[in-house]
Image (tube, rainbow, N blue to C red):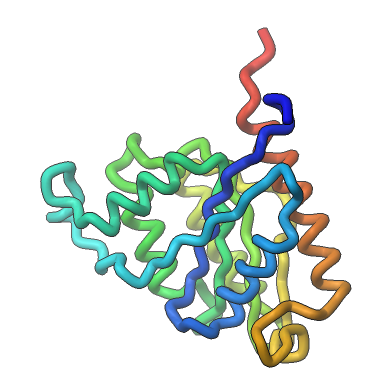
Length: 194
């Protein structure tokens, strides 16, 4: 693979702590469906403590937060996979973004290409949460891919009993989305033309 087609490292962050959540399953499906030029590595948020500004400095920052920030820094892009709680982003995901986005001016999210998707057993998937997440991500100065995102509604009908995404139209849509995220990441990461 030459430099233009090198394998991208994408950090996958699911905003649910529940082991069998549809969003963790969706992240696993994305890892399976990613093009050969992309590898998606999941990051587990369960060890991230609640944000505390008193601890947000190089001396006191909790180790799980350091690991999150280091993982974002090392990644070429980040893929956020969000459930929807009360019409918005779940606290666990917002909390992780709060840690990652500070201190201002030193955020590993600034300038980072990002994508988003989400699943829900409801009829509108995580559409409202993704709208809220867009606002949050814009404030981090990350480069959100201009796309409506992946909204997997009625998720219970799209995954089998073993947690595998089996609904073929959704699999095809995710495959196409990840190809677009690949292209977006390379575009955002390319050196400027002089």
